[in-house]
Image (tube, rainbow over all chains, first blue to last red; front, side):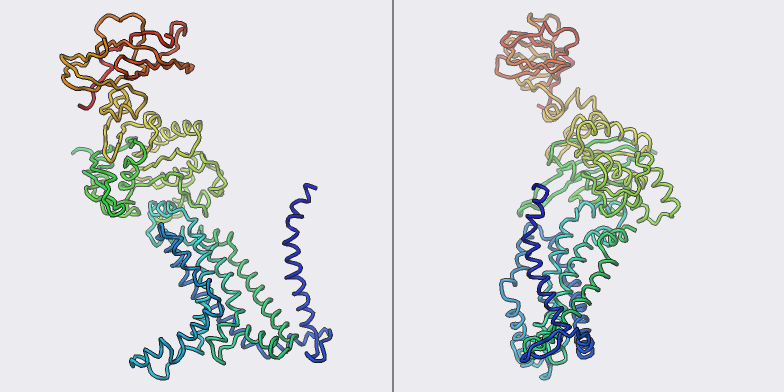
Length: 283
Length: 355
């Protein structure tokens, strides 16, 4: 009995995973191979051509999503690392205040926040309208419906997920190891490069994973802040499911996206797994 | 030409701003540390000893005063450009590097040729008895081994001086004693100046050539271990180093009258505090004759401690005196609780301190 206890304790999570992850995935896999329509119903025909059709139609949106996700992730890294560094090493007694401020936007719904950016950035809105009335911007200038707006929105929305893991790993760096590096003839820059940066890479690794995946799959930012030329794969899947009721195409696209992300993550982890990262940094 | 001191501090002051108020952590220290010396900064926590060491290492800039290394003014030189290395409290080893990479770090930063790095790191690991463990990570090693990695990482650079900040604090007693002897051996072997920060008086007495006893940002006494122990210059030093008895009163004509007895204080007049070590005092039932200090008292407590007995004796004026008596012969002659006894000691074993 005692030997079974750990498994029994893990049972609820296993049940959760199987009911809410494995079952829907299996259902979706099955739907992605069916043919038919919403009125007459769908039937299993092992139609692998669903995948080929979906890909040939929507590959621009698929690759655009990966590109936007990557751009936003790089932007988050460039903005987030210094912020995390500053809180961890210079935050002093107010660290928890800064962390709270970082999480404060989460008290408002994600969609609402994105929509308010839409208001703020609208062509004649508070910001652009004012600048235009002062003659600081040409009348035709716009931010919305551009790649910039969508990537900026993605960056804004997932930035805390980049900052927090990096902060956690930086927080664990003993400041005395930095002093030790300086004592051993390393300049400030060299001490950062050879001690702080390698020790924070596990956080960077986690941060990139936690932001790249949701940013790539997100439909909201492209819909609210983007134009017709910025449609991402998340929007397509949403439309196919909810508007066109073309469940097989939507499922096939979902699986394709998932497979691409999984392969990407696998390659990324293999190339930059935390152990390898640390090995490389020690050289 | 006189030989240059390895380290010289000249009127060094360190001020901090704490809640809008200026606090002096170090209030003006001037001292010279000779080449090849084992020098200790000893004092309670908050006495400024670590701040003093960090100013020598370059992590803190003095608010006033000058720091010299081999005669050269390095007051505003950053730590990476100073020819001293530090062994940090709890070691501060690089957790993501192997023992080898930890030790080679300083040499690599200085762009030492690969072959020389190999040779020097190998030699140093030999000296600290870690050969064969080059590939280990710090977290895979015991505290004593990590300690030796930290030592090797600093010493391999052959610094002009090695600074050690309570390096044995995290080790257990047995290991600490072994490492004290080990440190002394290594210091003799490499011939480098050691500056050792500690709050542990026995550690300082065991290893040092000279000790600066610090209190409240100032050096109270700077002398060899024997002199610090035998002739404490201030009440603070007497109290901080070992156990000491302090007897206060007013002296006249070289004698301090105390509860029916007398304490000899040559050449002193007026208010005076006298210190005497517990092991210098003899207990007897009769009043001793001869030219010695002798005061009567009542035994308040006897504690048997194996190699010696510790007595607490109350004097007539209420002061309590601690006496250690070796159990060299037999312990049947010891006084019992409540006995009236005389305490006596040679005049040369008590010192008038301060004023």
